[in-house]
Amino acid sequence: MLSQTVYSLLATAALRGAVVRAACGHNTSATQSCAALGLKFPSKVFYPGDTVYEYETQAFWSNTELMNPTCVFRPESASDVSGGVGLSRESKTNFAVRGGGHMGIKGSNNIDDGILVVMSNLTALELSDDKSTLTMGPGHRWGAVYNYLADYDLVVPGGRLSPVGVPGLLLAGGVNFLGNQVGWSADSVVSYEVVLADGNIVNATATDNSDLFWALKGGSSNFGIVTSFDILTYPSTQVWAGVYSVSGDNMDALLAAVANFSATNTDPLSHIVPQAVVATEDSAIGAVILFYDSATVSRPDCFQMFYDIPSIADSTGFKTLASFAVETGALVTDHINDVFVAGTTVGKTYDELLKGVQITNDVFFNALPDLYAVVPFANLSLVSIDWQPIGDLWQSGSEKANPTGNALGVDPASKGVYLCWAEVVEWTGSEYDEAVMAWVQNTTAAINAATQAAGIFDPFNYMGDAAGFQEIYAGYGAENEAKLLDISRKYDPERVFQTRLPGGFKIGL
Image 1 (cartoon, rainbow, N blue to C red):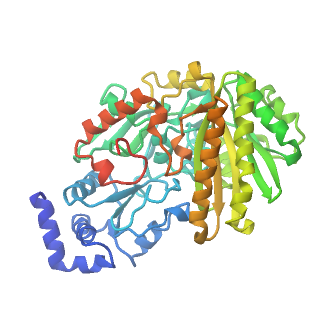
Image 2: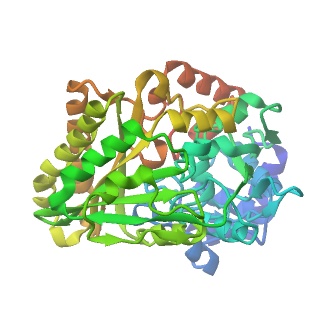
Image 3: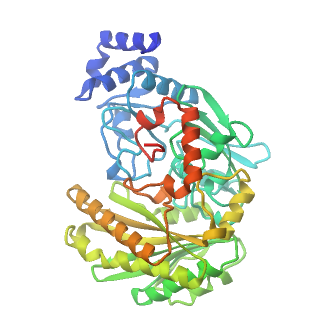
């Protein structure tokens, strides 16, 4: 039953004719709710034809995310967000929330026939007095955060590409350049401001709402809407970083180097992102992002196994993290059709880790003729597979930065090094969407079957690289999955963030 306030807003909206303005072919419930929201926040709700609506509904990285919300709500405070959630809850209207708009899954941060809540105006950036923490609004992308901190010779463990959004990365866990020192990005978050399903605004820290604090570190949008993050800062002037590329003839050497680094690296200042990239229908090249957190050490010994392979291009050098994130961000093509798919192999020895990269690489590339049979090669902008080693160094950094733990359930001590792999396909032409999705699902199933047969499969799928068809929480372990479900039901007993906010990876559905 609607509250009297919501009922009055809906009735008044209808009488004033705002419903007619919002209609535009959308369903009546969403139309009336948008009209009521517009009466409550008259300067913050926008409809098709409005400049702000047209801008915000296009402000996504991927074409996959483009949809047709009934209206756009652009709040300016946690209180505004609370009011919007309350109205959507009581009027039983679906809504979506967009931070940086970088999750390329249809419906993850946009909606048809509902309210799109955009965080564009929640853009706080403020250092604490001692500069040990940074308060960030969810409307930022990481490039803006790094640029702000560069003036203070500080960094935070955020996205590795400047266009990636702040909230999506942090709520997924967050793979970052400093991971071997401080673990997941979420491990450095010390406080969340959260709007709950009942409209209350709470803080979640290690001591206040500590169960919610734990759940937000990898639990996505199942508990509330985060309107502010406080994250630890770390000193940094420059780093040694760049992309080191090798020819396809040296792909076997690159895969061996990946396994070698993953099995033997003991230097926490290091970070790598190796990948194999399709160059032509018959060839590929290898590349590895190299990152070393030092303003004085060039070509560190821990990367020698990569330097031993002849390069065809090498951009490594001293630079700020902010400028490097721009360099890697150049890999992002706006308004492209895309899909990312995640998976993991595990290994305790060089041989097991080598088997992991070889099997995933070989199955992926052996499946390419099937992709070319349904999508013209000229329409494929990027086809690649990459690997992310997460081992003891990473876990040690995680526990040091965040003694309370996170929801991800990663356990290198018992399982060995996680090699989290990601398939990437980007293409032009929406007529190929179904063909690409069918291909990646088939290829992912083949990779998982092959790694299971080899005894190196793990069910962990990193949310930040996962596709909409994938399971996430089972990979966190049964105990963590059950705990997340309990916390979700505690803070959202009406399941607003499962049913009214349908986008993203939901627990308990």
